[in-house]
Image (cartoon, rainbow, N blue to C red; front, top):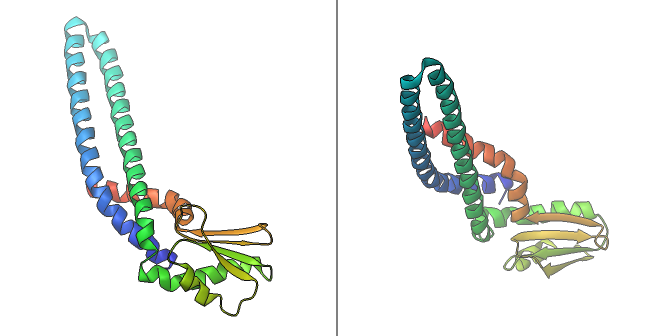
Amino acid sequence: MTEADLSTELRRRAEASAEAILRSARQEANRVLEDADAEVEARRNRAVRTSERVHREESRSSIAAARHEALRVVLVAREGLLARVFERARTLLGDACNMPSYRNALLEDVNEALEFVGDQEAVVRCSEGLSDLIATGLIGRGGARIEPLETHGHGFLVVGGDGQVEVDGTLENRLERLSPGLAIEILTRVEERSQ
């Protein structure tokens, strides 16, 4: 699977999950905004009865506090949304290893990683189910062997030069590298759909 295909698939799945989470977050944010607006209105009415000056000061303060609280709730909701989307994406990485697009691109990715090792002895550590496929790509390449991936990741890790060179091709690493850009894109799409 190319990085673009993986990114597209992750985005598609993240969007579906994000929509459901966003609806819930919007409802909660609307409730908080309604409560905050009601509180602002009550404070404003009390201030009008006591004095115009107190009214203006309290109104400004209340509105600022309500906006601040509303913004805080929205930010917390966005943070929660992104956390759930990326957590869901992480749970799908095992399935991504079995996707034809990932498996078709895997040997090219492994060979690119092996270029960083050069002529040094290399170890390709891969997740379960990928070793046979990677072994076919290593035929004719002396000094490279396959071992199981010691972490709970998905994909592969190339280590060469007695550990001096390490190329992390795990899907978890790719997701982590792409997460800032994906977060911006997810939140942009959420904002577009909410308008």
